[in-house]
Length: 365
Image 1 (spheres, rainbow, N blue to C red):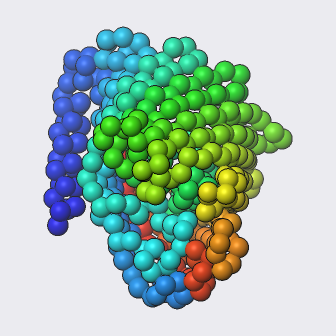
Image 2 (image 1 turned 30 degrees about the horizontal axis):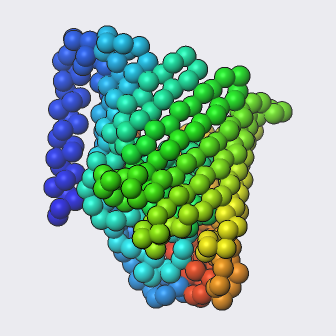
């Protein structure tokens, strides 16, 4: 009931903003935009893993942004605020995997998720405030509809550094980006405890990121190649819960093309954190996504992917997740996504698990 009441309040707030925007003639209100996403899912571990069983997850995320240029204030500025609510069913208690079969899974809570200011200067921009670093670093666009956590956040970071800044957590930090002629460079410094971002954040370590991206055309398609590095500097009293002082690299390749009236996309991900303190030193992920599979359903998509994480000290050397999904647009802003995952050696210890997920989600902006 708590998440239902919270959803009702957030929906009412964004409805009020939308009505004000329709009625407003003042420049300030013209510069305000809003977004709201909500998802519900059921997760069933049919066999293997720790034990059979089913759980549910729910999440909602909504926010407001003020574009200072459109508001008639000054050019290039943006204030952003987002709130996140989660009700977590902990599917890993049944599956027993490390990578995470659902990216919705997280600490049950309601919290401010983003609160930052961005200023653009020609080809460059700077952000400062409460930011989720994974929104910008180590992000694979073609993998966004896969449900396993590893496709959205390399497990060589997520598993080895639990305090890293990625959904459902964010941290206080500052980052800068510069883009020109198909190249983008980014750098950022974030607090080392994204779980408790306002608790003297840099007294609980820090995490630095660097990434260089290249986008262009190849044959009949478009490609993006990303290469990034990170370093976590954590004080000894917090290493057991937030991750050791360590570092690593990641790379991502994406390619999009059209064929037979369909939009195709393929991606390849690699992560490395070979320091002996890391329980998960290597990761390899790959997948294919197809949109506009049928002419009558241009918004539907289908995907198949593989995420393999190598483990230290486990009975088996790696955990491998095989996933396929179909996302169907039911109505304006409303989607239904059945998903099936086969997890080979969850945590390198448990029997192979077969997991089914049914997600219903809405997206407004």
